[in-house]
Length: 71
Image 1: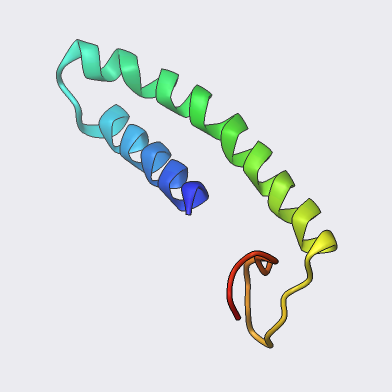
Image 2: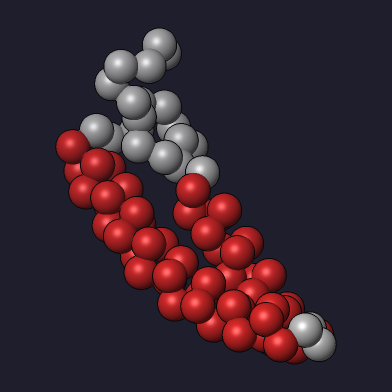
């Protein structure tokens, strides 16, 4: 769930760049985008790798199955 969280942070930073008037907010927005984007890429890579190790157990499951989680 951290990927959607980071995507939302980027969307908020984009909104700030379009609408903000406070110079501190305008200065912070690109830093947020620069920090969140590589983290999304890293976490997406983890998910892709884990999907190969732990294929979903149920049809329609979009996230890798957790081997330690109850079914």
